[in-house]
Image (cartoon, rainbow, N blue to C red; front, side, top):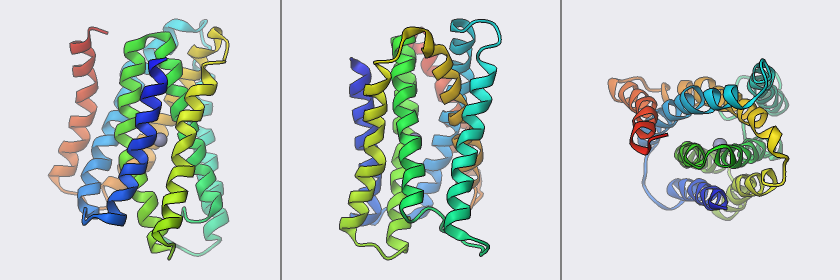
Length: 235
Ligand SMILES: [Zn+2]
């Protein structure tokens, strides 16, 4: 049941990340570095850890369809949210409003499922996925608060939104524990697709709103950290 603890810490990380812009002077540029680091960690976790495990635990060919489905279902949800929120106007702040919150909540739910699917397949994999979720949820919580603030919501409303969009991680981890064992390889492939989407097409461009070598170094160190962890943990 350690996966529930990882999911709980991830939920707490997201909420804590969201508290930073509300109550401290932590700045956007520092968040760029964190986002860059998180994108490296997510993509690397998917390629180094989740996919090989999904390949070895599913029957031949069964990991490709869920992998692609994971990638494009998040793409669809995200674009549906944007089209709903922005209509034809160009805007920088897309995710305010309840539709955006549903998108964020769904992503958190998948994070929780990934932690449990990884843990039940191999406890060390669960730990690595838990780490990847915690690391990216910090800046995601941060961004949620910034967006709420820019949209004119009070700190109290931002806090409610933060908890509502972060708690599904714990819920996802809890629910995934009830799934039949044969499903976990498929779930791993699906959530690996979502990790790649979030890491490569959401967080990476977001980190590079400002491009300097520090951002590049943060992305690469996030990516390198996963195989290093793997070696240290003997996975
Ligand atoms: Zn997430």
